[in-house]
Image 1 (cartoon, rainbow, N blue to C red):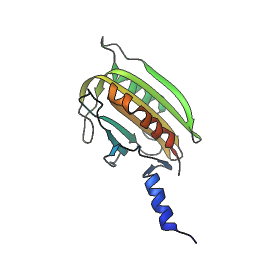
Image 2 (cartoon, helix red, strand yellow):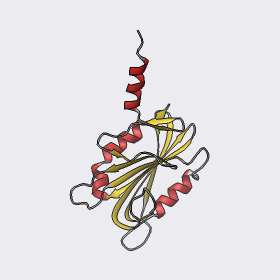
Image 3 (cartoon, rainbow, N blue to C red):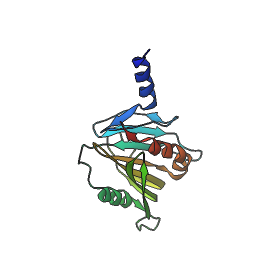
Image 4 (cartoon, rainbow, N blue to C red):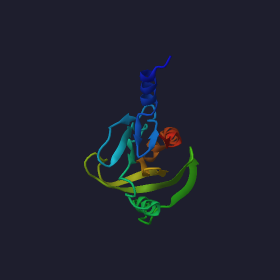
Length: 171
């Protein structure tokens, strides 16, 4: 006996988010703000004790072949962070494979020049911020994951972020 409706419901619960031939799991405890034209998902994470602001993790998809090269995105993300003395902050870049998908990651911290716009965190200079970014090379194009927030808040959600990255796979 088959239960296709049950299987579909289970698949929807396990992998609520997907785009461009990839699917992933929303970490438990992360609030989803849904999709917009360029954001496949936006998650808001509660602030850690002592931090005044929440963190945000956005999954972007701009279309097949769109969004710029991996290197251009890494440079842009690194360029959004400076040290206290105004010099560029360091950016640690690594490559890994997740479920057969090439993933390039970046980590940076310092003073963050946040962009602003509809559905985004408030812009301007944010002190003691951290970025964890990833570019997942999918069958339908690159997916860009950008997790930014106060350093303590990002650290508090690091395990959930790693769960998110580890859940990416082909549909």
